[in-house]
Length: 122
Image 1 (cartoon, helix red, strand yellow):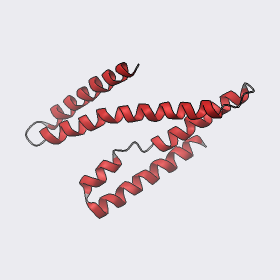
Image 2 (tube, one colour):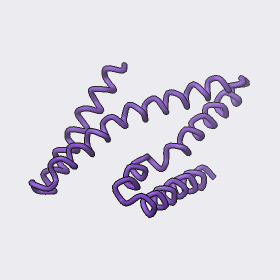
Image 3 (cartoon, helix red, strand yellow):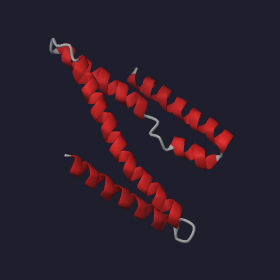
Image 4 (tube, one colour):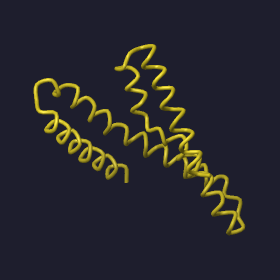
């Protein structure tokens, strides 16, 4: 069932991005496709799993589930910074350089930045 929910949310986000791209062009639509399609499902599933885990222990777990979902959302927000830098790097350099080199450099930049942000957060 969890996979079905993820598939449904991912499909809905992809369709929405396609409709936006059809109306406003691929540049704008791509921004919305960059939104992790699995994110809405993962947040709800994180909450659900935390609540179920606490219920098995005889506890309520609603606050714990909401807290876990909030932490997941915060991590996704911080991770988005790395994706934005990746996109900006590619956008600025792709026309004048090797696509393979630019994508490798952008990936390395994303990895370094995302790791640094994660370490600073903790």
